[in-house]
Length: 124
View 1 (cartoon, rainbow, N blue to C red):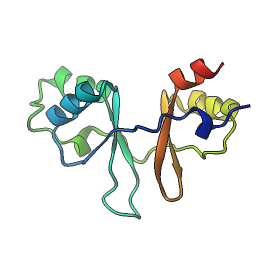
View 2: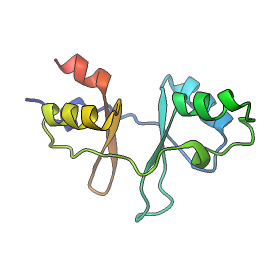
View 3: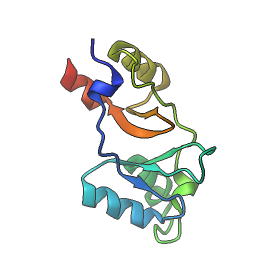
């Protein structure tokens, strides 16, 4: 069976937590992605994630100004991450149990990729 490393997308787009929601949306559009990994502030910090859903549910739905809201205000952190050697069945089970549609792959102390439900579908 394939592992997380076999399926992960390696061109993960990141953003600084102090960027605005507007900058996050522009970055997502520019790169054709639905989420951005929020960079760590230091080696002992956790990664975060901001998604299109976060922007819509926490900014647009409440008529908040995307030029004023910072990514760190609407992101999810810390993230559930997966080991690069985790079997695809276990990745799928973890994502199902946690209600996730994507999970970052961390190894060698850094973000190396991201596995999504779409990646799993393509693999099967």
